[in-house]
Length: 281
Image (cartoon, one colour):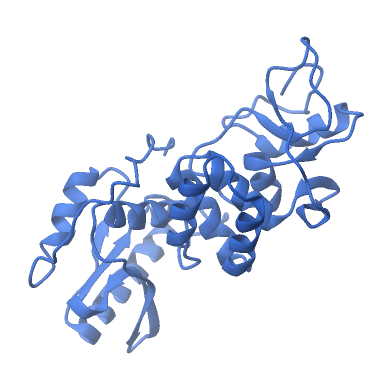
């Protein structure tokens, strides 16, 4: 996995960030706290793009022979900024989100912020942590990112979809919009209820046998998805527009705009750069 660090078994098909973090922890004798994307990995937050580096906060300067796969940060830490998770010293959840928002592309940081909120972290705690950092580099970018954070995103791709429409200047959508149907309550990924526009991200993985366990049946999933779509159509007179990872951002915006009864006035958000390349899918 890294110089002097091994795990048993065949070479992994994808980066094993948690294994790499654990190896670094075993190999480092000096004080260290995992931070940034490595802390996000420890807390179980999904990522938009994987990273081969391990981020730590240390109190000393690295030597010229320091490992190239470790990114060292020398920044102040308060007592409330440090926690333990699975036996690993790590920045607190709020500090982790703030560090990522200060340093990462807004979409990458938003994926982490959305996940943190979905798993129970309070947005007010994140803002408090950011305000305590003061006038540090990246604070404006972090403010923009946190203003968009929403725990209603169930996956990085749902965050990506919401980021696209907000970047295009469309009104901020409602996440997990509830529709009461004959099958019970069903929730739409993003919606503009005042315009009657419903949009969902449709991932390929749920249509593969065994995708969520050995007994997972893709044909049954397709059947249930059809029942769900029919029930939503009956309840509100329309079915959600389905977006996939293969759709181009510009085409996505055009398709969504076509659903509005009257094109809303919108202007692209100058503070949100284009999304980074898609992760492997």
